[in-house]
Every structure is written in C-alpha cells, then in structure tokens.
Image (cartoon, rainbow over all chains, first blue to last red; front, top):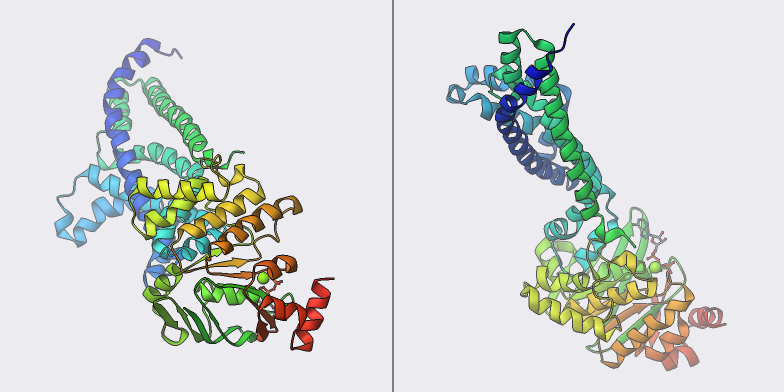
Length: 223
Length: 244
Ligand SMILES: Nc1ncnc2c1ncn2[C@@H]1O[C@H](COP(=O)(O)OP(=O)(O)OP(=O)(O)O)[C@@H](O)[C@H]1O
Ligand SMILES: [Mg+2]
C-alpha cells in the first residue's frame, strides 16, 4: 500500500479546527466531574446518612456500565421518559455523560486520598477551633489533592480520549471530522493516523503539565 | 475559670476516666502526672473534645458543655477556648510555619490576612523562630516543629493551652529549647495544663500537680507539697520511681 503523506499533513489543520470542541468537552466535563466527585467523596468520608447510600449506588452504576451505554441512555433513552430533555443538544449530553461517568472514579480516588491524610491533621484543625468543614477545605483537601492529583490527571487524560465517543451522539468534534474525511476520500488509514497523532500530542502536552503541577503540589514536602 | 465535673470516658467496655473533678484558675499552671495508660492523654483530649466524654460537664471560660447534650456548635465554641500541643507536633503539613500559626486567626477568628500574618510573625519570634517563618514542617527539626506547635496554640486565643507530653517524641538535644519556651509562657501567666514525665520541669513550673492513676485523681496539691510530703502512699511510690 502507499501512504498519502501529503493528505495526512493537509488533514491536520482541518482536524485542529475541531480540537476546540473536543477540549471544551474534556475541560467542562472534568470541572463538573471534579465538583461532583468532591461532594461525593466528602459525603462518603463523613458517612452522611442517606446521601452516603445514594453515593454508593451512584458510584456502582457509573463504574459498572460502559460509558457508551451511559451516553446512549442519556441522549437517546432519557428524553423518551422525560420529554423536557428532548431539546438537549448532543454536546451538553456528552459533557453530562462524561462528567457523571468520570466523577464516579474520581470520587473514589479523592476519598482514598482524604482517608490517607494523617488523622492528626484533622485533630490539630479541630483543636484550634475550626469546624470539620473548615478543616476539610483548608487542611485536609489540599493535602489530599497532592496525593490524588496524579490519578485525577490520568482521569483527565482518559477523558480527553473518551470525548471521541461523543461522535456517536453526533457532536462535531475531531473524531467525527476524521471519520467524515475518511469516508469521503476513502483514505481511512491516513485519516485515522492523523486523528491519532492529534490525540497523542494533546496527551503529551497535558502529561507535561501534570509533571509541573506535581512539582508545585510537592513544594511543601521537600526538605 | 476551668471547671471539670464528673468527667468519665469509656472506650467500649474499658472505663478509662472514672469521674474526674478539678478546677484550674486563670493564670495557673497545672501539671498532670501518673503511670502510663492511666488516662492522662484521654483527659486532655476530652477537655478539647477530641474525644467525646461519656459523661461530665466541662466549663472553660464562658462556655459550658455537658456530655449529655453537647451540640456540635457548643463543642466548636468549647474548642475555641483551648488549644492543644501534640506529642507528635501535628503541624499542618501543607503550610509554612507562619501559615500554621496564622491559620486559626484567619479561618476561625476571621482576621484580615495581613494582620494575622503580622501577629503570627511576632509569636514565632517569641519562640525563637523568627528566621524560620517560611519553612515547611518537613524542613524543621523536631524541636523547631514543636515550638511552631506551641506558637500555633498561643495564637489560638484560647483561655488555656493543653500540652500532651510535648517533649517525649523529641531527641534529647531538642528537649531543653521546648521546655524553655514553656517556662517563658508560664512566666507570662499563660494558663496551661501539662501532661509530662519531666519531673524536674514539673516541679519547677507547676502551681498545682495532679497525680492520676487508673482513671482517678488520687491526689492534687502544690508542687512543693507533692514532691516533699505527698499524702498518698501511691503518689509517694510513683514519685520515688519517677524521680530516681
Ligand atoms: N481510642 C481509643 N480506643 C480504645 N482505647 C483507648 C483509646 N485511647 C486510649 N485508650 C486506652 O485508654 C487507656 C488510657 O490511655 P491514655 O493514652 O489516656 O493514657 P496515658 O495516661 O496518656 O498514658 P501514657 O503516659 O502512656 O501516654 C489505655 O488503656 C489506652 O489503651
Ligand atoms: Mg498519653
């Protein structure tokens, strides 16, 4: 076979135009996932009655079913049950689906990180008159963030790649563009190589940022 | 100004404190001594509600909390009346020495940050750490960390500082600098309750010594009286062993 190098090169600028949508989904999804995960983790750590049980079921469901199934349920399934959801656009559905799915995993790693913070840190906070929530916010969570950040960053990178599933809902992101280009030119290999390289580069860039962030978060722990 | 009435604490079936009563006046330095496993730490932790007492009333300054109906709000208020110096320092690992001291002023007492930092810097200078204010806990020696721990407790605006064996985790070389800071506090008539095995130190600084054994207060009295003429045979035996 002959690989059409020029075609691949020419595809990059076209794909990059759609990278914005992909990154918007990933960033929005990650921010919402982080917020949900934090709440769920704190609920689990404090064993808040009722909410704790709800959280356990939530985590079990979103970890126990495939992301693609969750996206289909949300976008094609739920509006049949709840007509007010019919107007929801594919982008919104994808962001909601990604954030729910990843928040379930992230909640567990945040919870583990919180539990890993030495008990004396909570006691010291309480001893000077802080409330438990103040202690969480000022002392425990910042320390847990350092422990959880490598795994949270891995989930973020995973999420960037998982946004490609949004093309099955009809979101115009880079995977859908690559697919379109491929089927009109029949240069499948070239198109998918190009999109793979774009994902790869983005992930490499964020991995670099991850290292910087870890150095920043570790600054209090270096002798 | 501190009054403890009928304080008891059980861990499951194990009764660790069995009806403790005592009072501490403002500016008084009280040292609690007694054999290991007797409940000294548990008593101090109950005063700060780090352990929830099974029964008893704790009154510190204007706040009074009865274990029978302690709301989380009143517990927080009670904790604001005292502060704790831990055996293992328990400094906030994510904060510098200065931030450790300022944390209570900023978060609990809502002081403007600049003012809180200025106050904290002065307190760190008092404990001899003016040149270490931007160090993180891992960058400090044990003695320095414990002095930051004391500075944090001093900044907490409580009526009383509770010390649980503040020097027993320290290498011998760092013990004196911490005791010196505590003596300085005692001279300033800071109300303190100190659990320690340093008998010489206890004798020097204590206005009152409480001897505890197996969850009871066996005897209390002035340092002079306890060391020279204890009433109880058990106190005598303990001190004979401890000061040997
Ligand atoms: N969280 C806990 N759960 C169960 N038992 C506990 C707990 N904390 C303390 N105890 C028990 O309570 C008793 C008193 O312990 P405490 O630490 O108050 O003694 P202490 O007088 O401070 O001893 P030391 O001089 O060795 O520090 C011990 O038998 C201990 O095992
Ligand atoms: Mg003890």
